[in-house]
Length: 497
Image 1 (cartoon, rainbow, N blue to C red):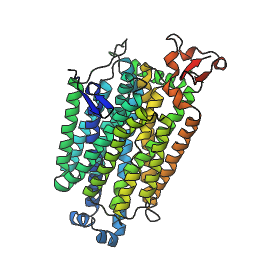
Image 2: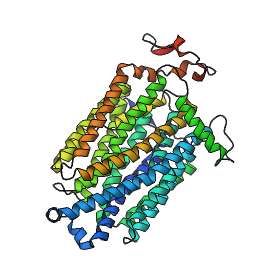
Image 3: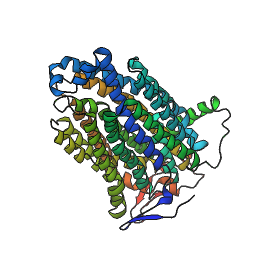
Image 4: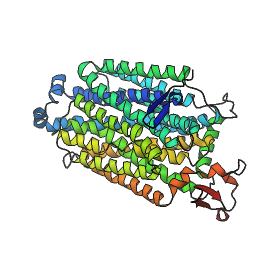
């Protein structure tokens, strides 16, 4: 099954044998980037036709008609925004429970394959539920919440990301971790290039039913790959899962809590918490932006079609993916740039892009915002790599499970925050939410700047656990004052003194 071919590009090379979970995440996000805007468009359509009629809703795409019926347009926008908020909550709350209580520890104790498979199956069910809603447009708009709720019970997008990153963090070396995670991160953006682009074209030229059927086929392909191709990774000692729904789940919760409170080498726990806060601030802005950007761009003076939205998001995601696949390896391998510096550069790119998007009144200005913000995918890759370098291999699932749980809660907060503020600021300044997101992203930049000046990049490059004897667990430190971590500049590693 192994393939020995090596792809070379100048002095850079990539071994195809290193391909593991990347196709899974690509197919999953390909489907997600099609389903999410399609569900939003379906929600907009159902809200409109249930309040008015099909011909009125068709005319509402015209900028002149929209200006003449501003009150009706604002009603549809507001109700759709609230429905998107409910859909996010319906997915996020069950996903939070599933990831924190079950999937995170499952990967560490049993195997890392099932946590990747479960959210994929949930996404298939969500797409099928969307197909049924499209087939019966006169049904209640609240039936749109069924698919996200079932997907959430299976872990949703957050669980898929958690499981994939846990898998990569387990098999990658410290030296290659940032690049491997960057490549995985790029799968989401490259999938978004095709997904959002095709969703607009397919919606304009086919039907909602066809789009949902297409995504089901993509997810079935991902399921086949997981079951028959992806190698299982098991811990040295696995547990008996016959009692998986009772006592074992309670033990998982206890172990996740112990992971948070565990005594670690000096500065490590504080650093992990700051990294988690930073990545969640970035995610808060990303989710919030994604929730409202379609509504923002369909509003006058822009009044974009679904196809135009697809062109923009496709180009934007392509640029983000190229930054991760091409630029990130050069920064790490050739220029030896620290992870913290990469994260800060990406954060400032995001800040600038959001500001330009918020004040955009012309189509070309929106595309300029996408170009300026093309490096905003770098922070997530760098932050995940740094935090995973500070824990052991058998803690990766719990780490990313806790990160995913925090991201689930942030998803709810983002939905509440942006979908509440956006309707309230429509008459004042429609780009308010994007400027607010820029400010939040700048806070993340400041956190990483503090860690950068504190020498965290060196700590992550030579993690404390690397030189610690196996029996010397950090929980055994009785007095942290007699231990400290010193950066050995001449040897470029940490030593316990």
